[in-house]
Amino acid sequence: MSITPAADRVALVAAINEGHLPPADLVGRLVNEAYDRFKTDDSGTVADYIPALAAMPPDRFGISVVGVDGATYGIGDTQVEFSIQSVSKPFVFALICQTIGEDAAREKLGANNTGLPFNSVIALERIDEGTHNPMVNAGAIAATSLAPGDTAEAKWQFIQEHLSRFAGRPLSLNQAVYESEAATNQRNTGIAKLLQAYDRIFFDPVAATDIYTKQCSLNVTAQDLAVMAATLANGGVNPITQDAIIDPIHCQHVLAVMVTAGLYENSGDWLYETGLPGKSGVSGGLVTIAPHKGGLATFAPLLDEAGNSVKGQLVTQFLSAELGLNLFASCPHS
Image (cartoon, rainbow, N blue to C red):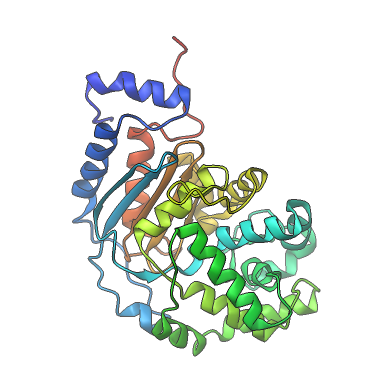
């Protein structure tokens, strides 16, 4: 049941039907309400298959919202840095769409949900069926291999520079996380070599895996992720810096793929509950995009069995309903 007072429902109905966030005071109150509601939830476990992530304090929790007009709301650990992990995937896919075009990107990377875990090898055997996409590890490594540049260093510099443009500030490599992942990424290396057998990787597979590992090890904050999400909500223009990073046409294709596979095998449940494109990462980051309205990001390291932030999902479901973000929501026309 909604907690929004009757006096605020008019503003919420307008936000749903006219495509904008509710008034700033309402957004701020609801962000704070979400934090208070879910801050004590201790469900889930911290990712432990990457040693550096296992040391993350499980009680970290932050919520950040950035509107397409640049308005910013936040509470909790919104300035604490953590590695971006899989939340990097939609933004790198966006850059590849911008570089080679959305049709070529779909042909090379796919767009359908595999229905399997993010690191599934079985999914690779179904590439010919089209069940392959850049939100799971195989497709993400292939996307990274398509970054411009003839050398691994050139490709890495392109990715670091342009993800920094999405965030509106320079993003640095978390060396400890990178070294920890590099020492344990045999599965991703194997996936990349299998991609090579299917002619679905476009650079040396070992080098591409290493670049992808660095990509996942970039430090971000919840505030950074909200700005990045708001950029996709704003037609590819960073609402804080006004930097045009990708063309508007590419945003819609990135969001479509996020809808199909952003939360892996739980993407259908996520869409049913929130009605929004989202992407999670095993360090506890989660981004959600409300087109024309803004971006929502949470940081909470406790994960469910599919590797998605428990608190992040609860917050997003709550705010999607209370802020009128659900893409499928409508109210009777007045």
